[in-house]
Image 1: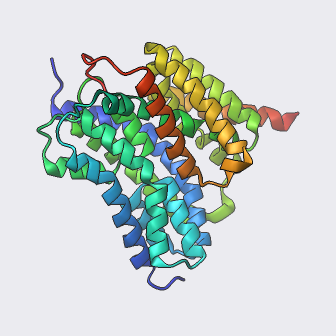
Image 2: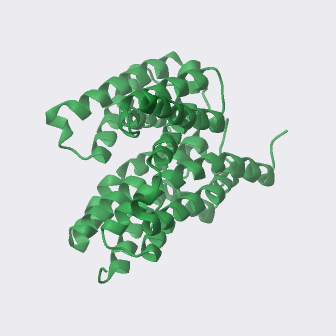
Length: 239
Length: 104
């Protein structure tokens, strides 16, 4: 029996909790960056509530600290968030065609690495209420973490921040590992992604690129290569 | 204190929102092209894998604890553990290993 919107929402609430905890840890560091850029706790928290993007906000704060121009900030924001354009394309295929506009806009507001990760791994089509649930429990973690990061500064125990910060990677693994187990192509692709990502970060030629740009570059090249060599069967309901 | 900080914040927020919401609102039908469908099928896994490694090695105080978290996460996720158990176990692995490293 298909789940109702309410059931999907509750499932989302549950899956959003670990995301919120992970966000909380990363946001502490974000708050410290905001404080260094000269933002008040309220300004930093408003930024986190409106943007929900670690790399994008970090870049923004860095540019703010350097007193960059408005156009420059807008441009860098577009570049560092460009991978969300790809994720949003992938999500559009996961939605039922009759999904109303307002639901698409609300979804679009919070396309983050983690929210995207859990939403795309739902079996079959995505009920937007699932994502709304995950947003409900994760966005406060991000905002609260930012606020406390500004207020507390560097007074936090390092061991705790260090441990919490790998939580997000744990969530990523919980999404791509089961897919790799299911599909041999994805398994090979994950191995290749690890290797390529490592190379690109260490090779001097590429390490000058921003991490956001490296992620886009690798995603496009590797996914396109896999799509050409191993196109998915027509009867798959994925992506 | 920054002057017109909110002007910057709203600019950043608008740019981010447009990038995230445009494909979701414009692409309303299933994409027909098999190549694009395949591409979008692989995108999530590649992008998540690329973001995980090697970044996880530098997220913690010692690359050793990051590596341990990676292995713990890979094995547990392979065995079918859910989102929350995997994430928590990774955190636990770091907390424990960094505590032990300090004793050495």
